[in-house]
Length: 408
Image 1: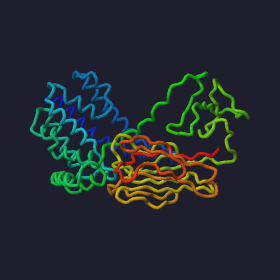
Image 2: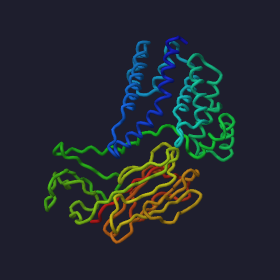
Image 3: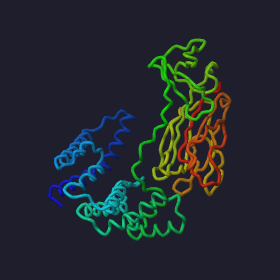
């Protein structure tokens, strides 16, 4: 390998070693900024500036070595892939597949312990192998490409946890345990090892409709059977006594719940109801969401292992209750708002659930919810205690969406 490429590898290793810790510190600083208005400290700002400067420096060097796309690279992994092609002809297919697998191993993190030693051991082995394959093909490339190398087996355990039978799981876990220690195999079985969380998938784009005025936006509630066909939302406008229409479309002024007949007057004197929804996702741990936010993933094979819902801020005379069907356990008892249902970390998935309101104010509201189910996708909206999901079919819930709206 050319000395220049050696230097690039060292710089990339430096970036790779720094970005995880720097990201965690920045995340903590962002929480303090949002919650208390605490400014980000000067050392953190300087560290961010230096990281960005070093990243840009590697981009410029790669461009000077004949990699014109380096300026569009947005991650260390992308820069590493470009660095592998500098000064050498394209490698054989096995090496290319092996390097892609090694990149995935290098992206793995432990959900609770950023410096988890057994995982760091596997990552270091992946880094060394990647540098070796960047110089010339090696026997390990074929083992990786054929999923026989312990690093490839590690990825198989993470990717296929829900589909492997017990015998196959035990065989693969023994391979990982022999290569990297029992602690790593246990952490994988508990869903603690995963790639960095992907950004939440966006909802399906709304159907485009022509509007009379470009400042008017037509909104529809996805999947709701109670949604009127066309509702135009005009923010910050005084409500007239009789809702007008534009080309036959009802106009609702302000951010009101979309439900029932659009021509019915909205209920008066009812408090708006906010929710705090916390879900525990396989490989990602606990994540918090609000009302009408999709809480989970789609198409990543991650099971929902537990959830808890609370009215936030509290509304006097109103509470939420819920239950779930857990694989291998069955229906749970109903619990009150804020309590957890599910068994996180035990390889048990939630297959369905029901949510209802209780208290003197419950008769004035509907609680609505739907879910994304394995092999079924987004299911229709349920409400007021209806069961959402399946039972005993081994189909995991991957995400839920919940909201409360006044009755009309």
